Length: 480
Image 1: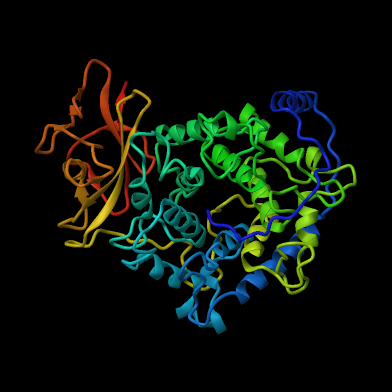
Image 2: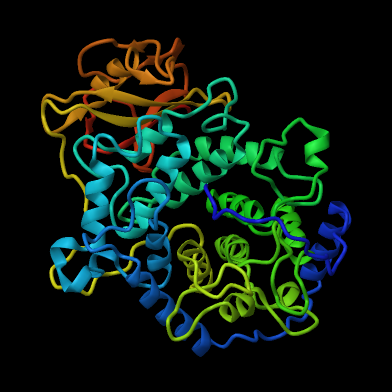
């Protein structure tokens, strides 16, 4: 995702980065032996105060019309920080005018036909998914015509399974993993199939640098780039994408990332030695990665010999009681973007969180389109997995004629109106309401049959007449 522009500055390393294999071995041994952990230095009371003041500052960023987002990046990452800190954006309104509450205004923006731009990128939709989820807007059901999950599915790279958007921009694939795994359904169920996430995880692993970190650009298959130093920010995001997608924090690649971050700590401050010098955004991304993996950023290998932690560093950059965070220690004013990164991290969040319960009377925790609008064009997200480990992923365009549609109608539409093309080439039977017996030439045989799941539900026999509603995320799977 886009970051605040940074001016390169010299920042001496306080520790040499250990070779990856040695570092992983050392940390794994410490974990296995139950190495003692020192206590944190930022107290729960200090963290609570930081959250309260940080939320107060983010509320000052709201425009008079209730907006946080507009052209470009704007301040929409505030929604992820609000969620982590336990504040519902529906409760945030200029001058108490609830008709201009931040959630409603953001939802209206996302539903605008021209959003995000005439030439959108995968990262635009990933940013929208993560922040809509945090705001209590179901990202698959923003409106009758806007399904952010389906929008993102359209950026799947068929020639490079597991990448979203151009593979050279590895950042887009990491945030696809964060968005698709993190933005769960309203009932807290992961809506996308594990086969899709596994493909993304495979690509993230392949791009991990030799030192255990990651960078923004593709490194897979490039020994020179893999040997380059990892980036603090991207390491936090990539390890969060792994853990959010189901990889345990004891996994060797996560342990390597943890070690890379620990070896990048500056003892005197608790800051990470980032590419462009120590700063709150880099610290925030790294801590959010640790949070997403269930790794305490205030104990063990993240408590420096000088008794400092990354949380200490973040809180030290906060203006109190005003609540905003500096980008760098010498800055004389807060940075809006850095403040969202820092608050999200201090509050214990990853890159998105489930929305807070509103305090506004009558305001629901979630808002979502409830049905198709007949005659209104829309999209649905579809995955087809024939069991070979290379799922087909696509966004299916269709115009419903009723408030619901059927699985058969979606598959029929996919044969000619899917992005990327080729997700579905044939379906048997091609008409009627019966059970699907073949997809893309693979037919039911023995105990292996085609089954369907909607929004992460259990896979059951794929029937053409299965009812499909607005925003449903559909997965077909062949197997026993």
